[in-house]
Image (cartoon, rainbow, N blue to C red):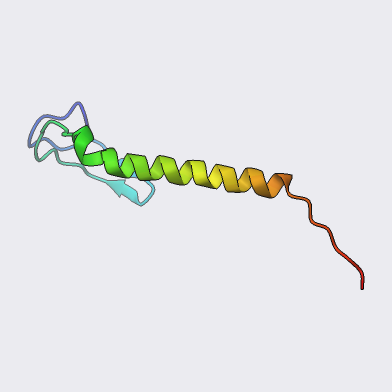
Length: 70
């Protein structure tokens, strides 16, 4: 698809997980990425969750479970 010009069709069908397709290049535009400020809160939450899960896992792995017969 990268080699296609705007308005051009693929010469051969393109195979995907969903079957064969004829692809037409409708438009070419630059990819835009969100600014760090837009993502910083989510990144912070994801890192906190990752650290919390690692700590819980480490605590579970190091725990000793004792049973008492009555």
